[in-house]
Amino acid sequence: GENVEQHPSTLSVQEGDSAVIKCTYSDSASNYFPWYKQELGKGPQLIIDIRSNVGEKKDQRIAVTLNKTAKHFSLHITETQPEDSAVYFCAAFRGNYQLIWGAGTKLIIKP
Amino acid sequence: DGGITQSPKYLFRKEGQNVTLSCEQNLNHDAMYWYRQDPGQGLRLIYYSQIVNDFQKGDIAEGYSVSREKKESFPLTVTSAQKNPTAFYLCASSISPNTEAFFGQGTRLTVV
Image 1: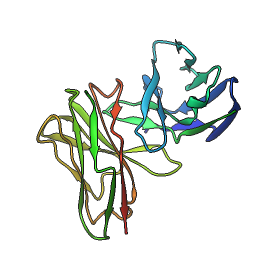
Image 2 (image 1 turned 180 degrees about the vertical axis):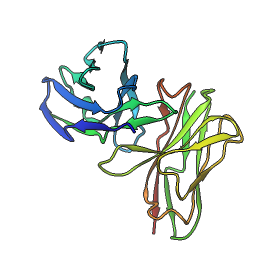
Image 3 (image 1 turned 90 degrees about the vertical axis):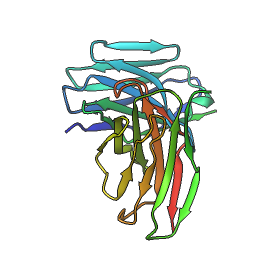
Image 4 (image 1 turned 135 degrees about the vertical axis):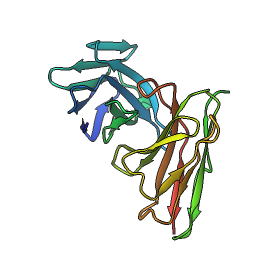
């Protein structure tokens, strides 16, 4: 079955710097890769997603890249701000109505 | 306002008791999901429903039960058979599984 590994588990960056979180997946048939942000005590919220027919997608300070050959995808946040502090989850859709989730990355923005 | 509502936010129950978590959505989504979240882990799927009166087990369905009698509602019962029920439970809905999922605020269940 599909397995998603996410790294690092914790990432601390200086405000204004960039942050990169990486995920790898095992099932080459996976075709949808969302990224969610979860703030303390709340449910996750979609911040960006990418489908397997696209290599990169951007939305203001956030971008996602997908390398299908290597089976990994990454979240890039530029010009980080204090409100970016949260836990970020990647996921991969393997079909049969199931998203498989990474273990999460706690992003800390230092002032 | 459109959205997905979970209640209660916090729930305390004694060991051996069944407890039901509520999930309601007014987004007109066909698909609904229940996830369990434990510290340091990703979300694990308990049950999902693609349509009214139909639901399927996820990876960790043992000790849980659900119903889907209305499109808007997908309650989860944590039974006494669940060995370690203390966790944060999240309900979600979406148009389809490979589109944006909208999550509720979660229910933190503590069994004492």
